[in-house]
Amino acid sequence: MTIDTVTLNIVHNALTNIASEMALVMLKTSYSTIFNEGLDFTTVLLDRHGDLIAEKNYTPSMMGAIPHTVKWAVEEKGIAHFHPGDVLVHNDCYRGGCHLPEHMMMRPMFVGDRLIGFAGNIGHVAEIGGKAPGSFAADATDIYQEGLRLPPVKLIDRGEYVEDVWRIVLANHRTPRNTWGDFHAMIGSLEMAERRMRELSERYDPALIEQATAELMDYSERRLRAEIRELPDGEYSASMLVEDDGVTADPFEIKVTIVIDGDEIIADFTGTSPQVRGPMNCTVVVVASAIYNAVFSVTDPHSLIPRNSGCYRPVKFIAPAGSVVNVVHPGPCVGGNTDLQPKLIDLLLKALSKAVPERVAAASGGSSSNFLFGGVHPETGAYYTNYHFDGHGTGGTIRKDGNNGEVTRHSNCRNTPIEVFEGRYPFRTLEYRLKEDSGGPGEHRGGLSTTRTLEVIADEITLSCLFDRAKIPGWGLFGGESGGLSQLLVKRAGDDQFRTFVEAFNTVSPTKFTNVQLKRSDIVRYVTPGGGGYGDPFRRDPDAVLTDVRNGWVSVGSAQRDYGVVIAERDGDYAIDEAATAEIRAGRERAA
Image (cartoon, rainbow, N blue to C red):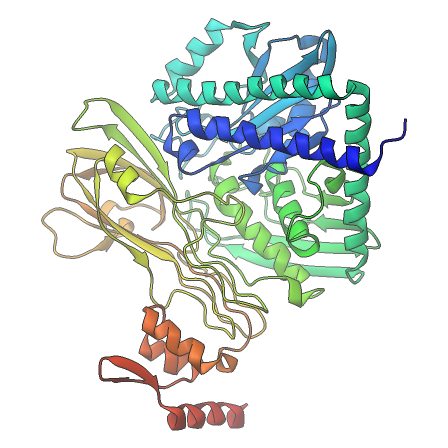
């Protein structure tokens, strides 16, 4: 049959609206902060072959898993395994999962006896067992220390709870009530999707919907191939060091070569370090997500092309098994998703900067700044855990400064308001602000990082952290300078100064450690990393530097040292010393 353009658009909008409503159900009905405040989840619709047809992608880090995870589960279990009313769950990193906390659920959708597709979602479940509260062991040396690993199994079989599976899951999670609530939020979104798809099938024949989704995938593929053809053919390489893996203090290297050949892109990670002992390894779908994220950033930054499996067809990659970008069993990988993936995106953009410098950004802070804690709440007596992350600086571009205090580009999550944070957990927030001078100097400055100071108001809190870029900052581009480093400090009760966790607790890494015991009145201060600058900072508009100084984002000293702009304080305000500024900048040009 022939489908006209209007009908094709109606079907596309209906499917994307269903995916958006699925996300709203999860937001409104979940229990955990990471769901209802952080929005660390993605909802999708797939056809009966497991191909993506619509999404509400709150979290781009999951986009590489979506085209693969459901399809792999279907291939493993067989299509005959699925019946009306089923819900299947899995979080296995070696079966297309991102990392263990992120659980995929899928539900077959039927109209009568006809399978018309699958509804799916992926969400970061805040506590799944393992050696650390919050299930984020920065010193894990195998997957079994990271939490409960589920192969594809049914939670619901033909509409009935599979109680033994539920008992196993809830017995192994430290906060089973939250898991129960979040799982049901995920299940509720799948049930809603099936209802809406049945309603859509009452308006349009299921055969027409299936054909429309196939045509939409072909359309997305054509659109993306056309965008890729606009890029200059060639091979573009880049490499980076990552400072440590949480278990040893040794850095490791990532190498990538991007090949643009007509209407296809290949990213080749050959030469990358072998998988590391600690949890900074990536699963193959995490690397896929980084590649898709980078490619879409330079080809379709405003998401004008419908996001479905057609978008992924022109993009291929090589990630050698057993390397840090394709972990094999039993390698740990919880930090690879949160803290290596954003740096992989930065690295891919660094390579692409040689092809399309006007379309890329300098390096971001590149760390989710994972701050996890748990214990017995002093007011309720109940056990709690929380996975908290904070915003960093993004890189400057040819057109604008980087964003301040933005949660990593691969997660796109919201930060948690102080009122919610303090209302649920026994920390008092003493300070939360943007960090002065943390944005890399540039003609367009890198975004500022954040700093937060917290006082413990319980007898004891168990803290685990996984921050990166404490030693190796995010780079600038085209003369721009590096962003600020991350930092984790603690002032123990009775001490008069802040110390690193290496000094206070003898940890191997200053920002990656597990199960440190904080006591009442201890104070923790952390700083997230800043974004790199783009372009020569001495070309920055002096008025923009003055505005930064007035905002408290750039110090007077940095204005003169890094930008060649002399600023004097006059009558309670700041003003540019035009003559001194001209002299410094002219001297710089003469020296060059």
